[in-house]
Length: 487
Image 1 (cartoon, rainbow, N blue to C red):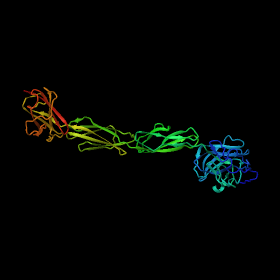
Image 2 (image 1 turned 135 degrees about the vertical axis):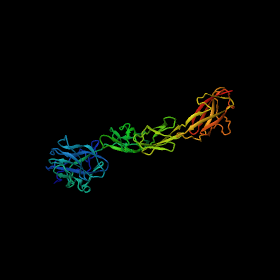
Image 3 (image 1 turned 180 degrees about the vertical axis):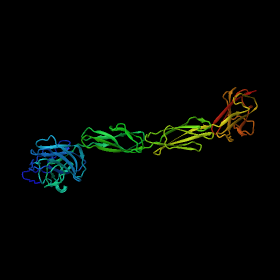
Image 4 (image 1 turned 60 degrees about the vertical axis):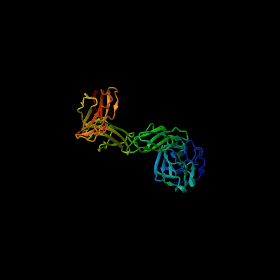
């Protein structure tokens, strides 16, 4: 490539760059006119300029100066000088016969400060504008600097033929091509402060966005990471600055707020939401408060709820009789049967654990009844017995356990209640016994039965009807029968 300085108007590098149209930056303002707009080189060639940026900006297109002889279709390109990669390309349309021509890429291309790039355009029949020795010094416009040849290992680049990476230089020549960059300020995004919330509960997010150019800005919340175990998070409104997020499992969730003004590359800021694990709420109840002896005589229903929809659960039931049952994959409601082999009052404890280690607990009570042959003579079990006042009534009752054995250590208690007579409802909690062998109010074991020698003389009404209530302390089981007195 041969260029001569004769007849060219040499413009001072960096001069006249303050009156660019709003929103777009370039190395030269559009009032600049090259001294020789049509250089008499008729070969197809790609010509360009190396530049760096001092800030995070986006290149939106290419501009070149066109002389009246520089006809045909032109294309503008953006290259990464480090790896010679083509970053963007576009064809100029609606060109004027002469003057500065602009083309915009389909999308802005972000620039990394300090990296070297090339803006170029393709000239199909030559007659490009040029001046040599221009890049003996650098040219700076705002955040963009066209490097001097000494800084760039040669600036003012070209390659003959079709569009290709322009790798050659000649005498620091300026071909009057410039990148166009966005001077419209990007939105400033603040996703807010890190926060914490329980799984299954919503937490408010309050982001803020300001735009220095008062552009209309669209916003979107998204999940960048988390939560655990395949859980999900949802936003009440992902496009609103003030919204809520709810997660189906615990974990560390990175939430990103992205804003776009439609001009610059989208801008984002992130906030961390620490989602805490929550134990399931558990309840349990036996099908009946009191059950008889027999196989699977107790039915327990366990219900639980977990605010984390993604959690899985296991359950451990301690039946209170020395037996424990584990359900590795528990779902609510959980219905279980159990055989209590002995009469008694049992407390079953239930623990439901989620796959994150939190445990909810509850308990339920059940009474397993003794088998009994009811009250024994001389008292009629049907309550028709009448005894003479001041006599002793041998109150007898027999019990058998679930396995048929006769328990000898129950110490059942006995009390009386007047049901007719002078004071109905009057209770005698420790009726008197006529036997020195009896402890007051407690029946004693004797030959496979329990007995209490009830003294009627201390009773307040000699012609009343009384109800006997016998209670087995170990399970609270009660047995009743009534009798009458006559003077």
